[in-house]
Length: 534
Image 1 (cartoon, rainbow, N blue to C red):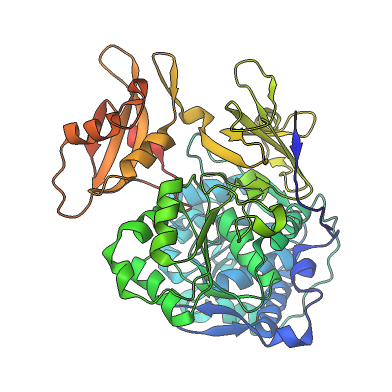
Image 2 (tube, one colour):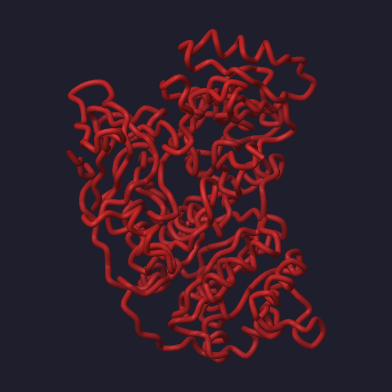
């Protein structure tokens, strides 16, 4: 049977993202600082941010960009990204956000598939942006380099060229329930990237669903290191923080010393991270050199966080650590642990090994992957493992130009099949076991890579690890560990296998080990297992 969200229903207004975030802002909040570019120290107030978004939208409208058009956005985190993203949406166009680590070929594929008419980027990414734009048929005048020299000197318009004339924002009309606001592309960790069609209602709904549970307030200072081009950073960081009138301290990329220094210097109260950052926070000696006492909560997402690792971070930093769950196709948050762990809303604390409860206005179910039967929530303990399904107003409209993939993911009753294996406990908390497609089948037994990775990370001489299934000489699928040693560590393959074997069932033992310099991961922190398979 399905289980509905235990949280109160929330109102989801029929409005654009721009109107939802900024339409009712009060005079007292306009002069609050919205954005701080950590590298330069430049501050942007809410008043200035809204003015720049309006000007960006006006510039796009003056160039004939509006409802029905797609604009590519290729940039690391910055206040300029926030302005461009919301300017595109304000103009009635759709933003297809591009991974800043993409090659020119990858960028060109996305621009071509999405039929983007314009690409907005920054100087550091201009070489690959220019090559990709040319391949996608985007001319120099529609390749905007936000921090560039400008049309006269560099041949491409910059932010001043666009916003300097102060064109008024257009009057646009569209249906928020069907009009696409964002078109991110799924990560492709288990298949080819697909355009995820997210409407204005999807994005508005997800902010409305998570805001009361986060408890983010105007006086909070939020560290923004997760990329805005990824749906996690786009919704949970950028949009939710702006709706809360909080202050975002924006980092263009992750550097541990900068990360810690920004928490200390800006007195950040909230940090959103992915599990790879948690590994550093738990294990790196640099942590002890910084005053992190302002930090109230660390929320982890984008991949499963092991409970022991989370507890190690909480103890070392002296703050609350919680995790949530989502995916691009869900805008992205479907399950959440409130910042207080659930004590106020639920009167129970969500175990750190769980991703919390189903968000408001939504429902979940767990389905046996062999029989197709629904798995009932238990009266005590944990349920059987099955695929997690979800239904709610934050479910995507579908995959762009890919009806077959859409039908495989969203069934006729509106349930989105996540492809993740999960369990539920008697309190309704959900636990992510692993990706269905990443399960290792050893002699008929199911071996979740994430479980073995958690065991490996507990070893004091292991800095990072990933596990995949490979075939041995007899064609049997076996677990293979890729291990990153701590600096100066002396560790053998046999020692790694013995360490794991002492803690898991015999069929779950790691049977091959390779030492590597770094585990390949996406910008959102997911392990790129396809890269390990070579």
